[in-house]
Structure formats: C-alpha cells, structure tokens
Length: 200
Image 1 (cartoon, helix red, strand yellow):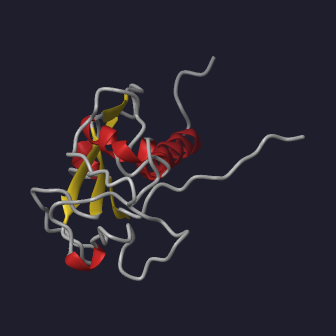
Image 2 (tube, rainbow, N blue to C red):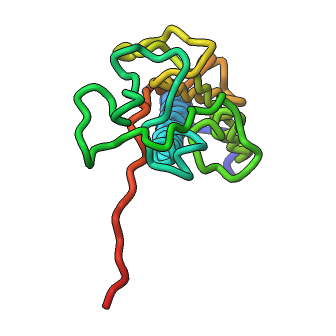
C-alpha cells in the first residue's frame, strides 16, 4: 500500500495547479469583458430601435389631424408660412402647405397614445433583466432653427432635438454614467402620409 506521493507526482500536481492559476484569471477576465460588450451591444440596439419608433411618429400632436406644416412662435423667419398663399417661401401648389393654420403644440404628453414624438419625452424605458438592468431616457426640446442646433427655445420652433441616453443600473463602475448617447433632430415639414385606395 502506497503511503506517500512520488516526486514525479508532486511535480505533476504543481504544474497543473500553476497552469490553473495562470489561465483561470484570464478566462474570467475575458468572460467579464464579453458580458460587458454584449450588454453594450444590446443597449445600443435597443436605443436605435427606440429612436426608429420616435422617428416614425408624427412630429406634433396636430400632425395626427392634418398633414400641414405647422405654425410656430419662435421659428426662423425664412421658414414662416405666407398667410396669403398658405405656403412657405419657395413652396408651390401641391407641395406641403399650412392652409389649415394649425399651431405647433407645447412639448409634453397629451395624455393619449404614443402618437407623436413629444409623448416619448415623459417615458423612461426600463430593462429589468436581473443581470442587464438599464434605463433608456429620452429628452425632447424645441431648438433654434439652424443646422443641428443645441440651443433650446422657450417657444415653438421648426426644429425638435431628441436625445436618447442609456443609463446602466448594474456594472456602472465598468460602464460609466451612460453606455449610449444618441442625438438627432426632426423638423416641421408636415406629416408623411401614404395615399391609398380600395383594391378592386
């Protein structure tokens, strides 16, 4: 009956333990890194999908009733509608018009469905999966009518700036204060409607 390990067996055991201690930390590090990358990719995908949902909505609540260019209080003068013709400068009969003279509404939810982009500004989307918790916050503001302006206006303008930020609820030490930031602008050009007729 064997009462002790041979020298070969001890050396072999030490080699196995050394390999385990040198490889395991790397494996764990790679697994953590892969998990964080997956979380970032998922958050990016969801933020882009949410942006697409906002872009597909009406520019303003009043665009759910008429497809006109809306009248605004603080817009740049070159985008104003001509009261007598019902068109913007350069507009022509048959183009988008403002003949119904509807005003753009103030920002904020109208209490109904998510039918225009303002309604999304009051919502925080939460992913409550236990290992992947994050919030998607949306900010919508009227900004001055210039290319990708960030200067907010107190009244209505022809430009709305949308900001979507994903805030991690877990692993924030590794991911920072925000994982994803998307910015884009949408403009007062009337609501796109697809003409349709009954199939005969």
